[in-house]
Image (cartoon, rainbow, N blue to C red):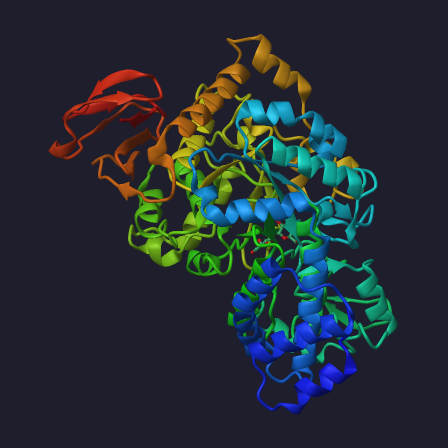
Length: 639
Ligand code: OTU
């Protein structure tokens, strides 16, 4: 952080009224005083355009902060320093994206996600996979957290001890820069996590805070005894109850620190404006390493307020918007992807051009699994017709599985409309995916089972959850049925790498001290090269059927303009197991029909659809008429 010229600081503070013009003038004057070259026009123009917004946003949250003007000068200096360090290739990208700001809405977008070590050992291993990623059709690659984290207490990289160092086992910062460049040249956008709600207890800030360093003592939420924690805990949810009850953990000296997740993941105190400034610095640093998209981890928990549940508070939105404004000034092509696995009413609030342009679609994910279990498309259909529309310049990231558990985050009120009781439905889904329900094909594992309130989430790979490898003939069809929805409902489809060859659960994690207590590792499986070989070598294998089926959908999607963007209209099939919707872009339209049961199903569309159409998936003509029969788990893209 640079400090501001004292005379300038005095000059700003003399004025009672503080506005963007004065802040801008003070910044320019400071640069002159420093004898620096004139500020590049590009930066100045963006600063001028965005500064009023930024001041307003931060002013809303930090209204009582006594040295606000000085604070803004520090922030401008930080952004300018970061702009000056931004590699020219990324500055060129900034200009390219400015000409086509909704580039990510193209139907050509297809995402993949993997752990660096599990998928390819290290960053150079990932580099070696670029030809494969290209052949699969990926244009977006989320590499799971790769920054420095303690060897044992790291939550799979989500407990960061330095945002400026790569985990040495995975490579170096130079390796990351080279990889980012090569991915960009291959047309693949690098997505990295921005883990900004908390740090590892081994982060320098945490250690200084613990030691009582005045500059860092307010970086986290540490209390001398249980008085305040007890008050907060009256209203907050338990996120990792298997690890510790409540939201606080006791330190070795007896004090209590806020830890929404693991005891070693300390929540940052965003009520302290210096935390925001320090994190903004780290954000721009990560952006300058070549990340085109930041996955905004655990957004819901950023702001705490006594008496509330401390989730999704208005200040969270303002702060993310402020981060976004900073990006627009110093790294304008950067996109944010919201990770809010919460009630759908709250998920959608993070999605806006000025906040997060992208967001996971956890509702669709959960309802895909619900549909498979019930063989009824009612809830999925409702979500597509009522909860799929977002701001025109934003996109969903639709997915079947992530590295996390499946949480049943549908709205109870929505379910109520079909006389489905939310509590009972969640209980059914948990039993079903744990293989405890009669006739279930699933082989899931419980995650964070809370005996106090009956909550439970599900771990397991896609393949294990659909019963691949069991005495069941439909496992591959189920995986393709799930990915069909993700590929055709708009936004960016995201493939959990390994799904394309049907990787199964691996219980081996229990032998690893860093993983044993966390069942999510059952589906965070090391790449099995044999399956990838089988997919190529043996055309008749189940693996090849899955791999080629998925690849076919990707290729088709890229050719089908009607699948761009996010506009969608659901269509009544008059059959509880069959979903249908149309996608239209300009002069092209596609009608998607999908059967979610293992029995043939008859549908009756409105007469207006009665005609002969081409099914892009099979390249065969289909006559839409009354009582049309759809084969088990079959789907069509009708043009
Ligand atoms: C995220 O998930 C990450 O995806 C997890 O892998 C991390 O462990 C965690 O944050 C901490 O960094 O609780 O079970 O309601 O569900 O943010 C996953 C939102 C999680 C949370 C989500 C969190």
